[in-house]
Image 1 (cartoon, rainbow, N blue to C red):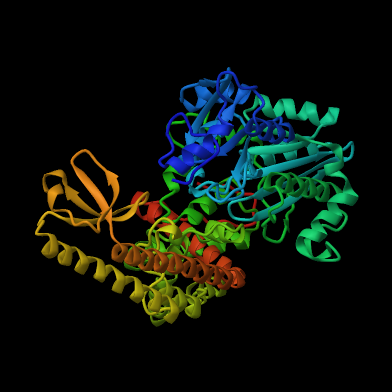
Image 2 (cartoon, rainbow, N blue to C red; image 1 turned 180 degrees about the vertical axis):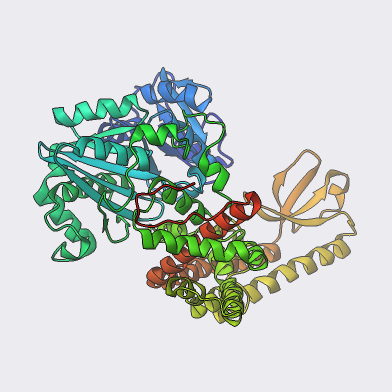
Length: 620
């Protein structure tokens, strides 16, 4: 365990050095309450008065003072005191579920990290807030529902109308629209009901605050921002800077001042929560409220289409009936289709044709759904990689998904060939859907060669990169393997030399490698053994030869992990260069998944295909 300035009440330091380093900074009786550690805490807390500050101390995140009092019952952890200062904490390795509890209770969370290794820090370890986590800015996979988008919304309000923008931080989706005139209030309200953002940013001026109160009464979480964040001029400059462009002409924002203001405010809010880290979003997509059938909030509520917020405990919704998707992106797309019905007849007919094709092709549908089962969430993986989060399972999962594409392509091509042999006319949209499935064979091959199957959770554990991928890594591993073999030989050698058959060579993270001899054989311990540690029934020793082997093994292991991490970062850079193509693959997989799901339900329930045209006749 890395030493820290203050031993946590839940876990004492494991080494004498850690304990000695911790003593001057403890908050103990007789000391003034403002120790250097608490001075550091209060300085950070003063910068984030509206957030609960999770302050990293060794292996725990601690909360102090009023933050501890407010968080303790929510986290269900014991409130303790040091020098009459309330405090409580949670393990660093299990942070996410505790953050989820705080967000659900309506709190914002600031994460203060140790910016240097406590073992090598001179004096007080440097800390800074690296991120503010709010309900609308989550990107951690463990905190998000897999089949539901988690939007951060922003609404700009003027006498002329209202603008609305939304960012899905876990996928990078960025959309904006506006409404002008008398219907603006009701249309934007309906749009909020449709997308159900987890958090809505509003200006702190009076008209916006009144709208915010209505949002709060209806279960929305509202964040106030200064009016300057909605400035049209600043919003334009912010968006240009974000997209690296000199004009917003290519984003459909011409003449849409309210949409620009809302989009700029959403980006500004996201920037504040990232604490200097780059904001990662996809190119802004502007849409018209007339593109889809507008379902007002009351209709959306009473039709039981989807279950939007946790306080609505419906037994069954239309989404529950129709959603048999196999992938997370497919589940999110299914939800979007349900709450935004198409108005264009030709687009409706194109969707119907795809569903009908797979409804009739049962064998193809079954095989495709098997291939999609367990497909990685490429959208959210790309977002995490772009944000700098690198996990072995993301790289491995992406490779496993890409490896299935040739099989999917074969199944679709076979279905297309069979349909054309039967002289069944296929529309251009269906033909393109069946024959133009995206692929990236080069990236698939690279990840196949690089990543082991079922990698460990973290790169610090090693063993992530496959043998044979990098010659330097192979050489280091061979060196480590040779040293470990010598350790086994040393154990045999020492048993023979001492005559102690129970002698063994062991290892732990605190003392490294050691020779363990039970107390019943102490009289036979050679004089060149150096005592290292005493346990309840044995003594542990080292020898110069063992120390040399330990240096070789641990040195090689550290070099291997450093090199593996570098190789993984290179893979990350290669993947991000292919972001556009991977997003196309993800979008195609999602649409295929939704179409297959609708075909599956139609087949199971014997649904019929309605005839949709431009007439005003409803004939049943």
